[in-house]
Image (cartoon, rainbow, N blue to C red; front, side, top):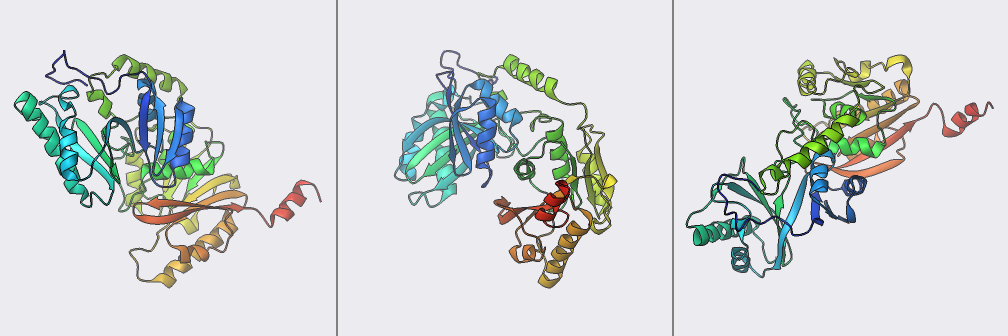
Length: 406
């Protein structure tokens, strides 16, 4: 870690070996996707957890997961694990951690917590006890203390408690990784970037055919699709990561990783990526959010879904995030809306793969199509189903007969 004041004789890295445990956090339902990403990047000892993946890797892998992973929320580096019976026990053991060897009094920090324990029923209080332990440790050793900055800290410290097991980690990502760096404007309820990327990854789409989002809001799905199709890393447009404040930050290694990624970025994807929305203000937000990507194949237009005409009638992947109705009292009207979506699928999108996410299970039933995949995901606090509808023209048997010339 790097700051304006260091005791060079006592500087301590976050790990002693070149390979060490790392934990990547994600959202429920995306764990296997994240595990696959980590394996592809070179992680070993990969273990799928609840909303997280544990693995072994070196600094290079930690940098790469932060840059490349589309489904990671944060990459944590554990520094201390112990058992604590109550908040006072937590305080005493956290006081023994040599925090002054990780950062200085001139640095700011913040505590983030994830607690599931009958011994710590007030999560904020446990985080407060950790903060007190860190501050008191600095006062004891240095005679003064670092400041707490909840909005923009130089160091984010994560405390995870399960029953009596306490794990203290540094967050190498800094701000959550769904903050890609491209978003300037958002609609009222924007789709989270990590969830959007996960939806596309579940579909298997990598740019080999046209991508259509005819209810695109502020454009998260089409923009994430463009980044996937052009092989742009998820964190390409971020300016800062938490590990850049660490005393063992290797800028030369980071620049090499960025250079290697740059060589693999495509100038343009081979097929169109289309986003449309009925609200012109949403399309204005889409265009502002997409300005960094410079993708000529990414097109936005003001258009009602029910007036949409797919280009050249070619096969495409269609992905929708329609209203769920959580803000509406008129359930019959919403169910009719979903029925109309199903009718539109059958009428205009035959030969395509359609994906739809919603938390409204009753409305989903009105679509009138059988989904061959149902994946449970969460859009914020809402439990949703991501559904795949293969839109064959006629039955699958009839389609196969046409292929065979019968």
